[in-house]
Image (cartoon, rainbow, N blue to C red; front, top):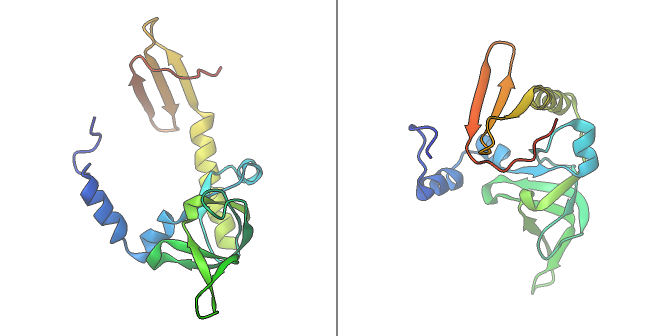
Length: 167
């Protein structure tokens, strides 16, 4: 079911918006997931990638290779990693472009702005996950999810949902 009547669900419009996105939006589109230990440490799942982050390739031909991000090529939606290169026919070496969703961040390049962004994202995530309550409405399997914030309550009912209900 369509949730927002002002947002198109057309595939071609979504693709057009993605590939014609300006640079400041491409930055967010080029986010990479964190490894499990970094995810637990910082309390976030993914973050926009930047130069000098250390990554491990998790998908594709170069799976398992690790290195430092040399360039974030927003125009082509790829990143260049220092150890992932190939030799051209004329003998020169070039970096292979890899999409950021196909890598996992293993070490973040920290500065005060990035630290503030991580703290802001982690606080919002903790607020939502800490206040999430799940109740079973009936033996039919209807599930209601409560998300309570300081000023309002949100309810969403899922009919015949198959959830792992915790606590």
